[in-house]
Image (cartoon, rainbow, N blue to C red):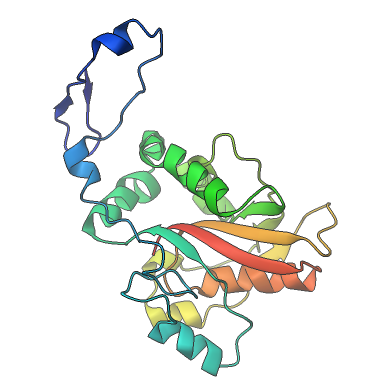
Amino acid sequence: MEKCLVCQHIMREELSFSWLFSLKKLQEKYICAACYKSFVLIQDKKCCCGCGRSQMQETLCYDCIRWKKNGQMPLLKNRALFVYNEAMQNFMEEYKFKGDYYWRFIFQDFFEKSISRYYNSAWFYVPIPVDKPTLTDRGFNQVTGLLRKLPYEEILKMKELSERTKQSHKNRRERLATKQPFEYTGNKNIVGKKILLLDDIYTTGRTLYYAKEILIKEGAREVRSFTLAR
């Protein structure tokens, strides 16, 4: 018997006779059904077509309308899987900020399968990088931690800055005013390629749009994004 990572209650598996004689391996669980229900899935056709925000219709939300009015590049067409509610905030606290790498298992399989469901192998999967101090402190990139079998290309890196305030510590205005944090480090020719950026959370979109800007300059034909939460 295993304990749910979130509530610590013991999870009891109901085993059928058909399974007992099937010789199949019991699928490991990391979260109980009750806790999983606290995460809110964003439904297809009920989200913003620009950033993936959960809403009643597949139209542009207020934030994306502002992006367009400000003369920004074409929208990312971000697809997010979950609403960034209290349950998701608690998950990020344990996984991303406290650095409990084991928590990646809660969404790893679903995240990968969802990416493959929406985007085939014709797309290059590119995770958003973290800076060296964060990688040293935490020990892992929270985005690549959600990827187990899916092939990806690490062709972006964070610029070395003497002082940098983490995005998670900034308000909306500060996030939008952030300067270009990335540089291209890939040795593959991406001219004419379709690239899918992968990240954990879409907040203002500023980080993802900067990544898109770099990749378009390097010749990418199309750049979209996919995130665990919005």
